[in-house]
Length: 77
Image 1 (cartoon, rainbow, N blue to C red):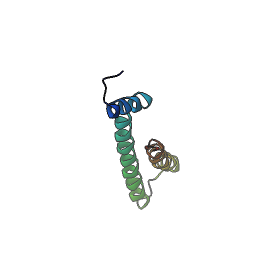
Image 2: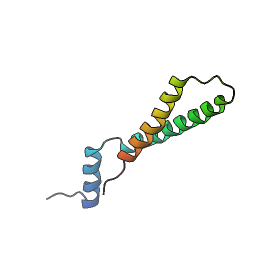
Image 3: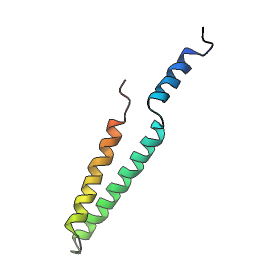
């Protein structure tokens, strides 16, 4: 039969089903942090009155999208 350790075989099969999962999760975390930092900066601009509504909606969309992608990319077992 096979000389590969069963645990290693399971790990390799998981990796072939979801390649670059670790890299994707790091990117989702980085993008989420960037989106929330941008939103914080935009909220600080509300006081000065130079906030554009379109930019705020884009930032809110990013603050919703990236954590959602991170949540959907979690382990399902």
